[in-house]
Length: 395
Image (cartoon, rainbow, N blue to C red):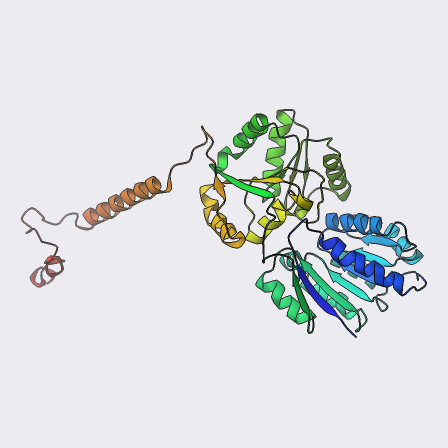
């Protein structure tokens, strides 16, 4: 019988344990000899960092059993991964692209895979992995148990669930797209060009011991890193242009408190479980409102308190509105002296005056060279009758 489920829960509430422990239990209740290249369970995940995190967490759950756990992902050589799989693996964690490479080379066979888990399904869709996921599904046995997990549920995730699951059960821990109640949300209105200065000021005044900063682009991350380096602040950067080894070292140094600031793009928004992390800063708001939930989910985990701080420029106000509608609440506004931005009302008045002046000038230019000295004044009511030159003049 094929059982298929979909689960939705806040970040930091234990989704990994929710699928890993039952899978481990069922494998142990039905023992089989571990076969090389034939995993019994497969967990698909979108990023390398999350694959490593899952392998570490599930490996810890299985440490007093005979079960083996291994992860395969891009950015590293395939030889070591191949040897581990052929030596025997019960639970395989993989990113879709690297797994397809191993399938093509016949390093792994999914015909005996009894459990298939899609973790962070919404991110899979965002990163364009859906076709790869479908190809992987075709390699697995038909009577497998399929589980789909996500912290946020979008229309795309719903469509995916109905496409790959049949008669599935939906389990929701809290209301859809909710954030943890232990996280406080605040935002600072600030001009885009002043964001580095504001971050430096808050870092010094608030004495943040350890802070994770999210930027929207690699260029923004590098600029902030350069500014921190100039001020001799211990920091590291984690984005797609960095090697897997460099990204791994940055995360480990941050977790062990060797560095004060970790700057990351969206690749670090999923799966990072950093014990005691109190501060997450959105240097830029994410392009997708759902990614806000994942970013700030790095703090306030497992019942601990956390603070989510966002720097919001004029250009990002529409995104802020989308985020507030998604999480169902207004984010507290804080104003830092010296970093004020012009109010929206005054900005609208300036634009309006400029626009009216522009229209007046155009009209004047349009009548340039015409005799207006004896032109009769027109009232608002009669304005329509007196528009343009007379018929006699047009001739």
